[in-house]
Length: 148
Image 1 (cartoon, rainbow, N blue to C red):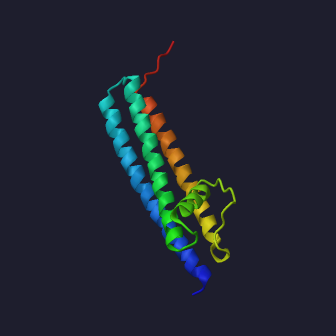
Image 2 (tube, rainbow, N blue to C red):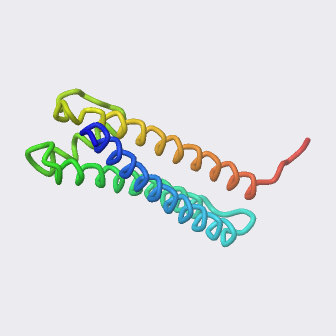
Image 3 (cartoon, rainbow, N blue to C red):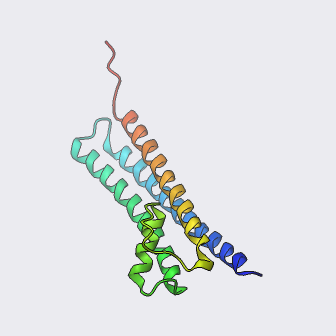
């Protein structure tokens, strides 16, 4: 087994962990959102709506921060960077595809950065789609059409 094979297996494993975290967060968000919508009644107030949206956004942010943390811990444990916070910083900038380029993985392991960027891009897109779907459903279920 070559270094590339090991690296690919590691990347797939970490990506699967992130997908599992994303699935769990999605299920929790949908469950919470459904219950909160049912409790809100037909015309919830602005404060109630604001709290629901705030909780939704915070849950999604925490989900992504956790996934970034998982990648950062792996980079730190593999000694790709000198300290823990540098590993976290690299994971955050790569996961979000910001990629300043001020830090690079060791040459033999640079493909992991691509895996991380792809995973982050897909997970953020997933959260965006979930957010848009839930907001649309919430709006539809709590407003009535007023025809002329």
